[in-house]
Image 1 (cartoon, helix red, strand yellow):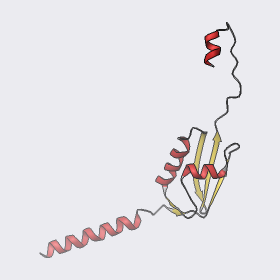
Image 2 (cartoon, helix red, strand yellow):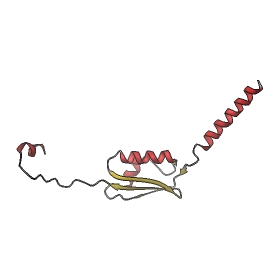
Image 3 (cartoon, helix red, strand yellow):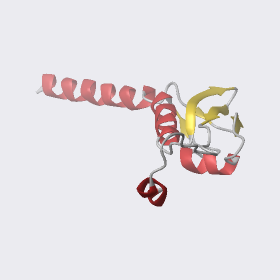
Image 4 (cartoon, one colour):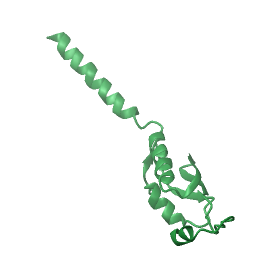
Length: 114
C-alpha cells in the first residue's frame, strides 16, 4: 500500500513539473514590429499571423506564425523572432506581375483566353 501511495505522489509531482516547465521558453508579447512590407499593411500581417499583444508565445507559436504568413502566398521570405518582449516579423513580399508580353506567332485563341 505504501508503494502505491509513493508512486502516486511521484507521478503527481512529475506531472506538475511537466506543466510548470512546458512554457519555459515562452514570452509575453508587449509590442509587435513589422519590417519589409510595402503593399500589405501592418494590421493585415497581424491578422494573418493570428498574434496579438499580450499573447504568451513559445517556439512552436513562432513556427505557426511563419506557416500562417507563408500560406497567404504574399511573402517570399518570412522570419520571426522575439527580442525584449517585442515580436519582430521580417517579411519580403512576392513581386507583382505587372505586364505580360507574348512574342511570336499571334494566335486568336490565345488572345481570347487571356
